Every structure is written in C-alpha cells, then in structure tokens.
Image (tube, rainbow, N blue to C red):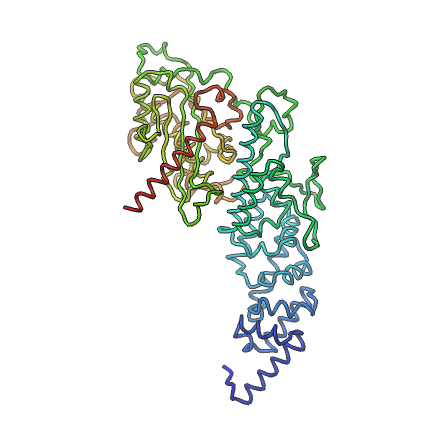
Amino acid sequence: GMGVGDETSSSALNRKIDFFRKEAKMNESQLRDAIMRQPSLMQYSIESSLRPKIQFLVNELSICPSAIAKIITTAPAIMGLSLAENLRPKVAVLMNQCDLSSKAVGIIVATSPPILTLSQKRKIEPCLSFLSSALNISDKKELGQIVQTVPRVLVQSVDTSLAPKLLMLEEALEEEMETQLRLVGSSFTEWENITAAEIMKRNPSLLVTSNEVFKNRIRAYLNDPRSSLSSAFQPGRKGRKRSYNINLISEQEGDVHSSQSQTTQNSIEVSFSRKETLVKAGCSKNDYADFNDMTRTNNRISDITANQPLHIFDGTSLEESNDLPREVLIVAHVSGKVFPTDDSNIVRGTRRAGGLAIHFPQINMGNEELVRRLQLASDSSFGVIMSEAEGGSKFRDGLVMSGFPFLRPSRNRCDLYACHSALKLILHFLRQAAMTINMKNVAVKIEICTNSAYAWKLLHDSDRVARWGEYSFLEEFKFDGKGPSSLANPDLLFPLCKTFDRLVKKDLDDGEDCYKNPKICIGKSVDIRFIHSADATYLRNLDYPVSKVDQLAKEAAMWQFCRAKNAAIK
C-alpha cells in the first residue's frame, strides 16, 4: 500500500494525480468523485494499467479524449480491469452479436460507461439473448440499433426489468383488445396490427423506463378513450436527438420503413396480436384474408354444436354399442384472473392471488348423474374449490371455480392453468364414462375456449403441444416456440402438455404409469383444440357469456386472496 508519510509513496501519488489531470483531463472534483467510487484507483500502475486503458478507449474505440474524464468519473472500475481478459472480450461480444464497429461500441461506452464493468457471461450476453428472442430479432443490425439507441438497456436486469415490462405491455394490449371486443360486438373493426414486441422495437426507450413509471403510463393510456396503446407509445419528438434510426411503422400505409431488409412484422409467438383475434362473425373472407393464415379456420364449431347434450356421461342406458354416438363434443370455456390487479391501490406490499372459472355449457342439459360426475371430477382435480355456499361453483350450471395454487400468480399464468384444469376435468369425465360403456368407436372432440391471447398463442398449434407432451420430465422439456422460455411459464405449460398427451393417446391405466398396462379406452380418437373466445360465436348465446366467466374468475381470485390473508393472520 501507499504510506502517506513515505516520500517515495507521496511522489508516486503526485505523479498519478498529475496523470489524471493532464492525460485524462480530469479536474479536482471529477478526480475526487472517482476516488470515492473506487478508492483503489490510486493504487493502479500508470504504465501497466492506467495509460493502456486510456489508449484503448481513445485508439481502439475512437472515443474523444475529452470524454475520458467522464468515463473514469462515472465508472472508475474500468481502470482496474484486464484489457486482454475482460475489456476486449466484452467489446468483441458487442461487435459480433450486434454487428457494430469498434467506433460504434465506443459511442455506446461514452454514453453509458458502466457497460464495460458488467459481467460478460452473467449480464451482457443474457441481455442480448433475451432481446433477440423476446423481440423476435434475427438481424444483428436491428439488435445493434436498439443497443445504440438506448445503451442503458444492457444494464437492465432481464428478470426484474425487461421481462416484466414486456409482460405488462402484452397483458395491457390484451385488455385493450377485450374492451374493443365488448364495444364492437360481432361487427368487424380493424385497427393497427401491432404486438408488444413491435412497440418495444419501435420505441426502445420503453425498455429502460422504470417498472412503476411504465405501469402508470399503461394504466393512464388504457383509461384514455381517445388513444390506443400503440399510438400512445409512439417515440416522442422531444428529448435528445437520436443518432441512430429505429424501425417506424407508417400510420397510413402500414408499411415498415427500415434501413435494413429485416422487417418488424414478425412477433414472438407468445405475444399479443389483436387483429388475429377480432370477432369475424358476419365478415367476408376478403375482410380478414390478410391474417387468415394465422387463425385456424377449423377452430369454429360447425358440424357439431355446443348444444349437444352429454348423454354419454350422464348414466343414460346405452345397452348396445350401436346406440352410442359416433362423435361426442365437449366444450369448456375458461378464464383466469388475479387480485389485486395492477391498477389497484392495495397491491403495494401485498401478495397477489389468482383464481379461475371453468364453464361447461352442456352440463345443465343433463341429469343429476352428470352433475354428480362433474363434482367428482372437480374433487379429483382441485385441492380446494370455491363452493356454492361461498358464491362459487355451481355444478348444476356446469360452473367450477377455484384458486390458483402455484407461486407467482399473474393473469397469463392463471389463464394457462385454467386451460390445464379444463383438460384435467375432461380427462376424469372420459375415464368415468369408459369404466361403464365401450368408447372404442366414439370419436371425442374437445374444444377449450379461452379469452386469453397469450394462452391461445401458446396452445392453438395442437401438433406442437403434443410434441411437448412427449418429454418425460420438466428438466428435459425444451420450449422451441418463439420467445424466451421464461415467458412461456414451463412450470405450468409442461404439465398441461402431459395431460394433453394422456388424452390424445386414448388408453389410460388406473396406475401411475398409464402406458405400460392400458386398461381402459376413452375413445376411438381424441381431438383437442384450443380456440379464442372471439372465434366461438356460440358463446354469446349462453347463460355464461365471455364477460360473465371473466368476472367469475376475478371473484375466485378475490376468494383465494381472502383465504391466504386469513391463513396468514391465524
């Protein structure tokens, strides 16, 4: 160390002070601030550490010498990092993954010096990987433009900053869509087809906004009937001048203008696309031909309807196999909600709870045996059910309400679990039926209707869900959809896919392993489709329309919230 009273040490200290003043152009205030942030700064060798770092910044990154003082003041730790093992590899990562020149990286460093102090493996690379995946960026230049526009995005945490903001925007866009659906009814109204990923790419400054400010802006825009989220989050003209162009979407033409060939029309598969889920009833094919390829036309129930009674499950006497219907359709409408909601004043410091509502519209057409079987299936599928005495489940109406039993309740997670819960209930229905009648010649069709664009995006491709269900364990499960695995909630998605797999394989066993010794057959074939409620026009004529099931899911979330609160008090 340096002894203050030592003449040689005192001389070395003065030489370093002169070095920072003359070669780094630092004034006394800047040098004081730098030493306060990094006391070891004055222990670094001028020849082997300090001067080579300044030469690296000026000569290799083309940073103006007048900017060196700011860099050292803001991030003095840079001066203690190894050039060969730390600084140059980080610069190489930014150049390679973002298609940037060394000069462009220098501008980024001069704008946000702490970037060079970040961990390459734990911070920079995961952040770039998340941005590429979550924003559906395949062109390195496009990724580089975002980093150049908002260099501070590299400092943001993926788990606590970037991913939550993207999720907030996805849920807000879905809420906006649901509001529009309620307003337009069955008529077709077209508005801008843009996803959360595209909004973020169009205005990257949103990525570095604090979560609280971003949430408040979303809530304010949702409450303003004069604007949409897409228009409200347009990049502003005020503020500092941007050095780099970003993708812009023309309001009039709908064209994408960019300096590169890669367009921003693609979106992560789990993100929200409103045009795809508009009510199409009464529209000509020309009205939605441009996005019909994204919507499975066979999602509509045509050959069989939801008004078909489920006599096959209600204990009706069917002595001869010829009396059995060749096809049976089972319809379930599901919804998941959370409480308190994001805009609630009591959410601060309070753990949220989730709830779900599942409605089988065909149940109230059956007899008491069918109602009893629904109750048995519910008891087997859920730990605790919101009872009818508590204002919850009404089995005679085909309604089941329960709480969300897992960690991190969110609207998307609750919707996904609601879809899985419907599959579990139907699996119990089919098992009960197969125990008493021969189902080998009955084709089973299952329609799970969800009002969640998030859940529909994940599940509408039945072949993909079946492929995911073939994995044996969660540790082996590999999410190969577009977007980061974390946003797909694999802890909930994988069990859903396993139940899906059990259903489509038809042969079940009462033991833990249902494939080694199959004993009962639940159908000649089992076809499962997840459709968006906007495509299920028959739901509007039911006693429990979309809006009512959504409201019941909110009540289930409130019930679960109160249960958890009372348990904590006890």
